[in-house]
Length: 286
Image (cartoon, rainbow, N blue to C red; front, side, top):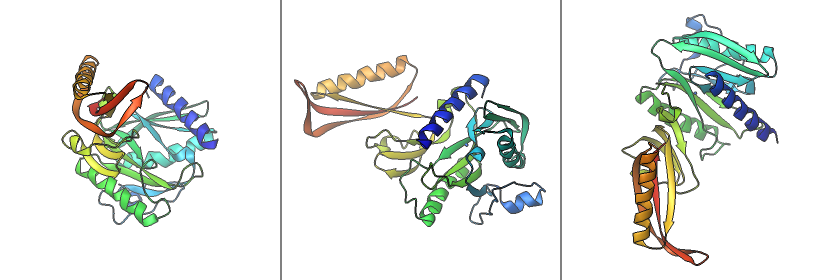
């Protein structure tokens, strides 16, 4: 019930942010710059190449969500929102981002910023990936497997926190910088494709940067938002017609087709009087 309530609150926040225009620095570097970070205490990550801020978040009001040129949170009181701004302002400042304003209303707080190069903060949560949540070393390894490709892509990681709260299994998130786009689906981000079906990763290798396929049905990548669709047909001619029709649909809706793959089923799939023998997996950009 608690998780459902949080999801509902997050959905409200996202819609409010959209309507109003609305994801590594070491502790030693922060201290050298005379920037003070409030609780929770952040630890220096000696193995991190990019010097991102690291540590642990247990209070959900410190867990920033991102949209456009601002971060936002759900905070029950103005004091909780002040904790949020006190926590994030030094991090933004260290990465050459200037706070341009804050707003708190109806338990919803926004912190707006400007960056010197026009980049914006985006976030990725690892909770939906496949990993051993009880193995701290495995989680640490996974964290660096995600951070390094961001660095190589020039998408500077600015923070990565272990998230410990009863509504989540043990997990972590990553905040990084990227170039904004008018359509958020077209922003180059760290993303996860996970639609319940096995993914043809080989078809996507030239369209996005594949970071990790943590399960046959889960792919973490850097790029624009991927779309996926499966169609069924009784015979080969029918499945080719379905593919052609969907390509036409994508073009009419200004979505970019990437690739497809047709399969013949090991066992036919029967629905009513129709026996399906073929299916096609289709990939596109949203």
